[in-house]
Length: 431
Image (cartoon, rainbow, N blue to C red; front, side, top):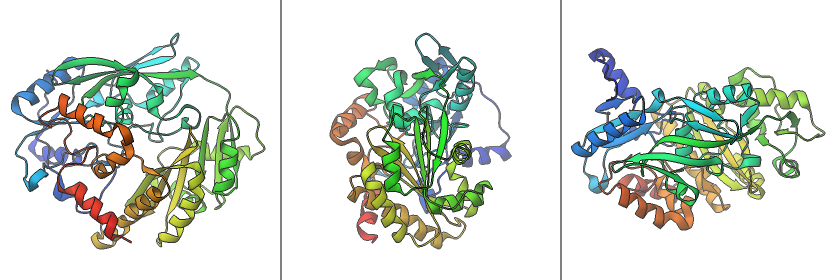
């Protein structure tokens, strides 16, 4: 069984509070959250299965958690608000941070990772063997392997290798019926599903040989950036609009020229500024660090066709009146994940709430330009049909089959209860 440690009563309240938070802080969301009843930190798959056995017997809900670096509420324990009834079911949080081991298969160019393995720890050991990750998140120094897979993220390296879904070879998952290994077309039932169909206990992810990379910076518009980024076989592309560069300078202590700026990581020779490119590359992690300027942050992240991005940024800049900025990580398939930031003081409830409405405006704008939200989680479960497209009905039926009582991370990915309805109404009433 998972190791049990006695936590002093004075500390237990703090632990329960921390486990009801991720990097986000949506207004009034606390009313929809519940305190966890039990926190397990399993050390192996056998202990995970034991936790699931207990949850099944007691009818408890199970919420898997990695590092909590996402901002969509995917790891938050939420109340059962279907039919406006508060649930009395216990909530068990499975914290995977102790399951952090991994192995490197140099011959097959694969890593075999436990769910709590941290991306950057994996990368450092890969580098010692002349290998490197094909893709990783900008939260790699703390983000866990299973967490990012469960969210189906884009990030560094996606320009050449696509999202994490295109780089997973195989998964091992556990649910109330036991353990199974899935690969090929069956991976869609777990990647991006945030643990609602089973918890990931092992992942096999593709890696590549290290190459000598150059980093180039360009002061160009978003439209010109599209031409440069997709003109060659480049590894990564990151665009910072001038507004975000200003925020970045304040938060990171950098002194970048406050202009629209593109960074390209590539093995090709380009006519760009290498010192500028290297400086942006070295500060690519934790873009949400600008929240310290608030203190607090409203963020909006949407994935758009590259051709729509220049007009999207232009309209967004006219729409948002407060200081803000956007960065874009480009991805294979001529698209980009646009992450926009609005520093705001979350201690001031009403002004923060009105600022938060801008994330809804950004989503509406993106959808009008053939965009989709980056993820669903709890906050944007109302957008699942748009995000999953033709797979929506099949995925939802699969969820019902493997978890008929709705015990696995309830309230996530698919819309349940009044909150998704409220989000839909907000999109209609917010201009």
